[in-house]
Image 1 (tube, rainbow, N blue to C red):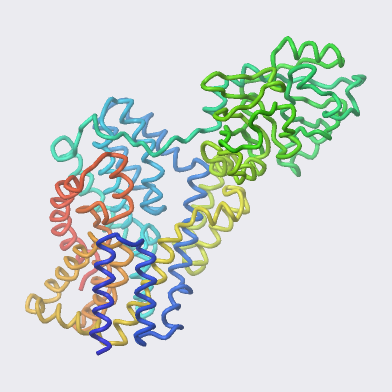
Image 2 (cartoon, helix red, strand yellow):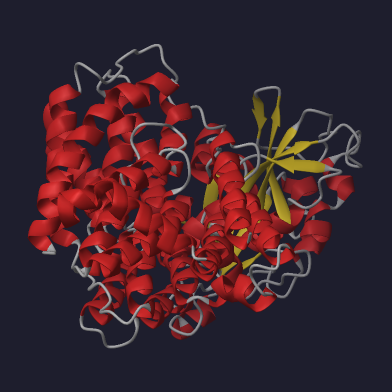
Length: 615
């Protein structure tokens, strides 16, 4: 009876995975609860997956991948791609796939595709090609890159851990690489050959409309802020020394806005203070040799400089960009219909005092106002441009009753914070890989060291940034699916399935059983996640290998490889789902392009796997 219940629960779980009616992690948790309610698993057994080292490692890899993304290290690959392709479409296509394969060896395939997709779309448009010609190959090669290293794909980590739990040697960091290289070469050759025949090339298809993401740099360009920003220095005998900013009434008297101040006396402590600058506030006082960054019309600033015996200083284009830095940024904010600021002037609302942000521009129905803003009466539909500390902008974003911030200030703050740290992220990644290759620590500890270093070195802004970049759906899915193998084992389900495979295909020897396990894993993998597929079939493959007294590593590698072959449906992999919308693909596009690749990979892998991992 428990065996029948186990198969019923697994069958319903697979059907729910295939229908996509509920999220995958919710389905996995429901299955876990069903096993406990049916008294097949104890609560301790059901929750054991959440303490599994594979789950912790996957969480850590999300953090490391985010650090690589935030610092711009991975985008260097896209820049090199543009440089080397020289507008040659075939060369661009091959370079793109090779770079995705290399980057994907050290990042999740989802992260790789998410990183490369905007680059690929912009390149395709610049070459007057349809992005649909590039995005399915991007997804397929990202999946194949999961075979390049142990950490490149969750199925690799899962089968390695199951081998260890069964008393066998774990997979080495580069042990799968020969299989990965073979798969990558075959996949790239196939995609190059069919790119003009099977791949859609409809220029009318969607060209990645993922929503309007207004970057701080674009805001500065739209408002032409660089032309309105000036730098002045406080002289030794200026009457402004010791005065508070609020007492000067600059907006009303001179129509000016002080953006920030660089304190000269802090320069000697530059190593201890990451940025020798401070946000200008009402109580800010001025000191000799302060550098004041101020926004407004040049004639008004000249009058202010003359009245207070200040000095004009040359400002470089780079300094104009300093409005966006690790600590400070800009954001455009829309007023809601019920905002308390409506019908009030900028001067009266006390925005700087309440939110510690400067209003430096107003967008009124496409007309940009950058001076004499103090007397401007705000209306519904106005967009106000604010400047200040990223933390203050993020706090303002929570004022949903009054304002809606356009874009993603938290995202931009994280990117700004990590700017210039690509070499550090690269060194951390190399250190993590070295620790795993030379087995200095266990893989999970090596990954956690890399994740922690990404945070403490500033490649990620803080722990909130690290947590926000973890894909908890994947983490919970893995943790909830792992105990299902325990349920199969306790009820005898694994032995039953492995015996059935051996009975049907055993006459063909270990080779026939290997083909059967590979085909079953690939088939299920087109409808449920590769993680769930590996969790279900790895124990079955292990039992089949032990029953036939052959090398279990051969069968486990076949499961890991088959679980990464996600080509025939858009729901086979998160990467397929990502590119489906961006490329305007239909379900049939994946079938048409993916099925021939599946047959080719079946032949190639059934030759390659036993050669690299003999029976």
